[in-house]
Image (cartoon, rainbow, N blue to C red; front, side, top):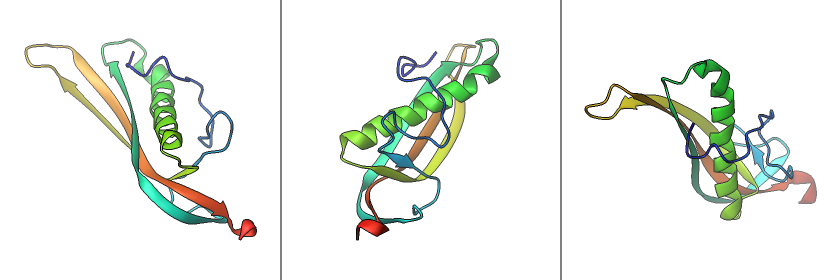
Length: 119
């Protein structure tokens, strides 16, 4: 299990933070909101052992761990939304080892948004 496995492991769709005040979208804009400020790129990772049995059963959980890690980082830098969410998966072996390690990375742009109704 990855180093972020101790973080929140619930899967909710759409991805939102625990207190529902940080929105995440794969699109570059959020309908009904205006981007006031682009803060920067945020990311989250989950690393796990590919030899672990039933890897498919844990993939959704590990993906959510990566997303929640990214959400936490976005909140820490003052964002109230992340746009352009993207996933990347990969695997590698340590030199001299037959053990395969898999990674799930998620990244997006942390932004401050305001509802168009608020002006």
